[in-house]
Image 1 (cartoon, rainbow, N blue to C red):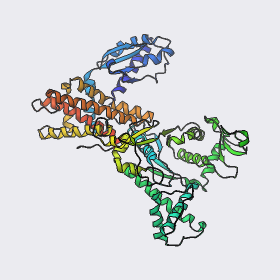
Image 2 (image 1 turned 90 degrees about the vertical axis):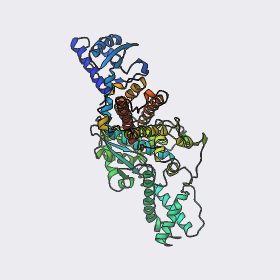
Image 3 (image 1 turned 90 degrees about the horizontal axis):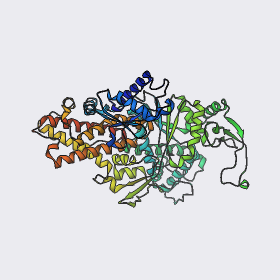
Image 4 (image 1 turned 30 degrees about the horizontal axis):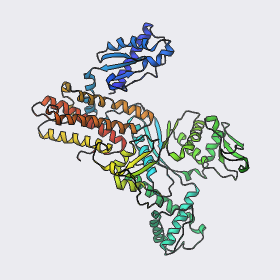
Length: 580
């Protein structure tokens, strides 16, 4: 059940009544009408912007509309007050019985409480991580992996048909560089002293590969020309790196549905087919680009290239897809890859990029818009940098990768659950500070601990209640008389529970899984506050053996909190715990 959706339905029905009476004109677009929590809880349980968004098209003052609809809403027994505020906002208070109805709903639906059908089975592709397969994933990839995976989990919970996808960048020159770097480690395994030229990968993570290559091929490649060993070592190194990446992602709890190889686009006609689709739309031409910004005319050598008219779909400049020597630009296979996604029948595409790929956003959006004739939206989410700290001081771990801290380093230090939750404590496009000491401390300042502790505390309360003879099964608690939940702190917790279904939908629509983490912290805060009151006032304790009806009502409440915490953590890929 979604109380906010129910009241929005009530508001829309009230507006239709005003249309029937002639108070409002016919034909009004009511899609912008919203019902949401007020910014200040003192103003009420909910607020609607109906009068504000309809005033201009209706040719009326907002307050006039608000004052007209208020008595209509008050005619429903679920609404106890409807107050006009400011220029025309309408603040609503609901009957407490309606809020309390959330509790049996949560207990009856269990893990499915809050699930939404807004996705309606829409096919959505979430591509994330997609790091070059030339080394271990680093801490920046960790944030993209967590964000993408949590977003996929959120969309699945909201009713979308989600495919998690990793694009393997195995078609470029970096794979040749990887093979040459492994070859140097191979020579090193044979006792040779080696130097790593600029541009190669000197990380220690390639030492085992060099040894494995020696174990497999002996000295067959020692001091042999590159054309003898490059293809075989490239294939060997690629498989080894992908195994390492898969292992790292699994340590973080991330599993992909599809691993798509860039190399599969080459020599198969797929790049040509994508560009032909654009050419047929008149969007491919031969031309000369203007000098890049910051270049003087003396530095610029104009040359004719094959260009994609991306400016026709919102880009700042047209983009080359073929070099003057006839080779593809980096952009060409990316166009073909997204064309493949469209051809696979996805209705929505989401790409999760690092912040350093911000310059790619407009051109990719233009390509997808052109290829799909604007029917398939592409949302590109950028994840900002992660800065590592310990006790507030910049923290540098051993960099076995040679130049960066790896995903596995972070997971080994903090654990997968902590890593995932902390990575979602900031919006994806805001920088994030990861302090290992704070992430592992047991305090309110640690959101991971605070949420997990709430779940564990509730599990403890239920165990003790069962030992005291209470039936704490969900089926039994769903039948509890909830009228005893009269204290303000209990009602605040019930209202917070009632926000969950709406929160799922708003977070899914915005593609913002961090909202789930924020909500869980707020829910845990309301629970801990109520639990603390029980320490101060014995009458407010959850378990009161001499007041069985009150105990069952409170057990139903806190068990509902545990249901929502478990569901929210499940979306984020974090395991709820029953003991701490």
